[in-house]
Image (cartoon, helix red, strand yellow):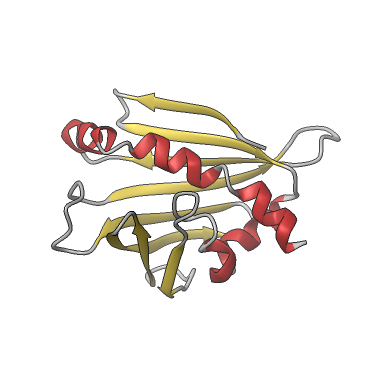
Length: 162
């Protein structure tokens, strides 16, 4: 299912993408836990990421590269907190020397079962920026649209992996 909301909170310096996915949180978690599945959505459509390191252990790092329109974007996550099947909190950054907005962000990826007997999961990816300047720079780089497109690929990947 596509992204259901995109909210930028200028006071809190956050950007949150929400999507409804037609699978249980345990199934959606596979899209994070399995690097081959994570690669399918942690990059814009048609430009999957390649993870050279992947560990969801607090204190560990994940490293990835995204090739988009001739541009190479290399980045990393530092895992801060893991609640399997429900939440992943990580610091997200880019490797030095890239023509991308500078600084790191903290991201919280939450998976919540839909209420009642509704099948599916509400996926929320909240990005916390360190300053208004950083949020503005990311907005100018079309970060909202890119991240929304990435999250919007989850349902399709789950269908293909089933």
